[in-house]
Figure 1 (cartoon, rainbow, N blue to C red):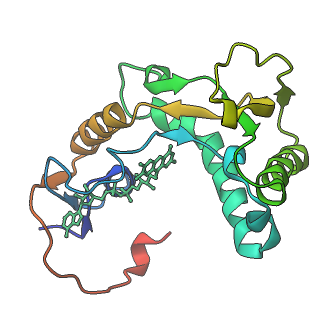
Figure 2 (cartoon, rainbow, N blue to C red):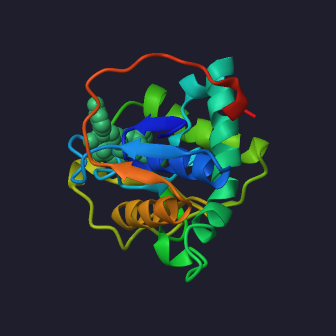
Amino acid sequence: MHDVVVVGNGSLGLSLGLVLARRGVRVAVLGRPHRPGAASTAAGAMIGTFGEVTTTLLKSDYGRTKLDWAYRASRMWPQWLASLSPDSDGTDLLTADGTIVMLNTIGLPEIDTENYRAIRRALTEYDEPYEDIEDIGWLDPEPAARPLRAMFLHHEHAVNAPELLVRLEKAFLGAGGALITEQATRSRHLVVEEFLV
Ligand SMILES: Cc1cc2nc3c(=O)[nH]c(=O)nc-3n(C[C@H](O)[C@H](O)[C@H](O)COP(=O)(O)OP(=O)(O)OC[C@H]3O[C@@H](n4cnc5c(N)ncnc54)[C@H](O)[C@@H]3O)c2cc1C
């Protein structure tokens, strides 16, 4: 008997299941072990916030909120990864230390150059460190895709997506959650307020 059944065993379903299990909720996560169609197994797994900023994002309240949440979430990653296993501080799951964002000759100035500027504007607003990279001579680009400018974002990392799923699953089971290796065929909408605190 479960209080909550989470449909979908990707990184979000497992994370939600884990948080609930840690709160003492009897929770099951539903999904087939090979995860057909899962985005979590395809992901490049960048923990990106500012590299994803566009002019459009900065124009709307929704976009601003999304950026703000992404920023706050990115600050929680180290603690979250460390919480997944007693044998690791979580840093072994990280596969990149910082990210290089490049503006290249592909695309349009009014879109790509403006989006590059939007990234810098957001970085400045959030007082985030970044560095212009002057020497990009080590690149061997296609002639039509030569870099114009590049910057290094110190705090944009990446995580090993397959290993994250393994660790989430272990942590979830360790916290008393149950995995049901089935496919849901229908769902009903319910809001259970006591779990929303
Ligand atoms: C190519 C690619 C690259 C990406 N790169 C990045 C990146 O670099 N950084 C980043 O932050 N995000 C990236 N994303 C987005 C990110 O991967 C997703 O936002 C995230 O993985 C979604 O997780 P999820 O658990 O919600 O969904 P999913 O990982 O899609 O998990 C859904 C799960 O539910 C299961 N399922 C579906 N239907 C049912 C059912 N009826 N019953 C039971 N189970 C079911 C599926 O099999 C799957 O296992 C990328 C996505 C793609 C596709």
